[in-house]
Image (cartoon, rainbow, N blue to C red; front, top):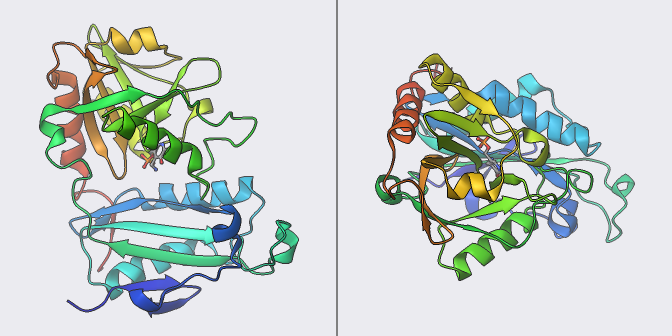
Length: 292
Ligand code: PMP
């Protein structure tokens, strides 16, 4: 296989040569934003939504992306074409760019843009069949009035600390609560809770406005399920019939054990299965064609 090409500021660079300056504030301070996107069967899933969110994240940190959304969209598609990828995970990154060792962004004259693409199968492997073991972590999600979880920033340390804690406790995924004890999100996914045939998901003030979350709500409502957006507590999770999480990388993944408690009867439930099936129906059939 030929070497993967990475987009860097308008050029395509072989993977091994695609290095980042140690003075890039994305590296020094996590000062930047990114997206995670998937392509299925030659179509990029929800590309416009991801590009919009990338620019919204950038806007929120006062980072002006030096290319238009249309140019970004084309750069993403061209990166896939150059690598001849039809099924891929795509990672556009915009950093504040190269500056000095001070943190003042005014010292960074030009943002850097990188787009990485590669093949990446099911993130949780065989666990989709049996469900994930999740752990509610002690560390709280970043407060919205400190570093809003709505911003998909390069600063993922909060998420990584959650993952470390979940790993140490034998969990496959971490569940965050927010500062008030409300359910927030997983380390890289949004949460859905099912009780008595009704589906609940937290509002997005304390979590990322997940594109898979929005898709799942739409697909489930189309199929006649009722989805309520409301605050949830740990009690709601422990007493749920089913829980699943959604994310671009994770897709739709069941949680069958939370903090040592079986969710429902501990097997993957019917509404979770319906959500997974609905998601599989649309991926690869809708989306922006790469090669047309
Ligand atoms: N929350 C966090 C913290 C994430 O990193 C992700 C993955 N981007 C999500 C939720 C899910 O978002 P999406 O469905 O848009 O991938």
